[in-house]
Length: 239
Image: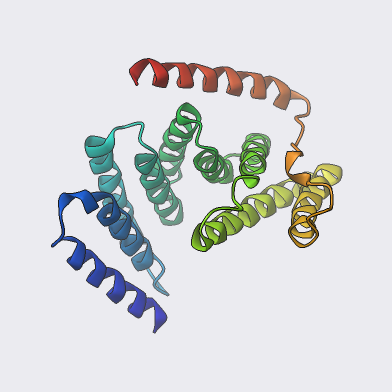
């Protein structure tokens, strides 16, 4: 089937890259990660197989930290791949730790897309109030990124759209579960407005919209921003 064809194609590409100069090491890492994730999508995959793949993904993340630096975005993306597999395998504690580390890297390096993905994955693992707060962080990071996606290659734009839909939908569902109807409607309206803006460029651009924080979320946001500033300062000092 298509799954087997994808794995075969990735295996062939990995074999060809192994015969090329070291300059392609980054591409080789990407292909290896894609191949691992493709293996995880097999129908009927069991918990033991997922756990083995999660360990392999974690080892790959450690290797990237050693070769490209612990604060490198590629390391963070690999951590999130491993976290997703650990979550599916039922190891929420490891998935939470890996997602939190990736979020810290995204905050330190000011990588909005990375921060959004990490916040969304971590939020999915947290209870209601914390999960909603992290979901808002993810959506607001995506809002900040939207304006810069128009010039991206088509595959990257498609990846952004998939990530956006998942993050917005996850947050809207969490808000509805807590009867926070107005906030859920705001999230869904942001998606509809963005789709409309894509069709009618003369319409007001909704991408400047940000979700507000209520109650305890306001204090959490101040702490989040203070931690982000400290991480950015630390990253700059080490640069």
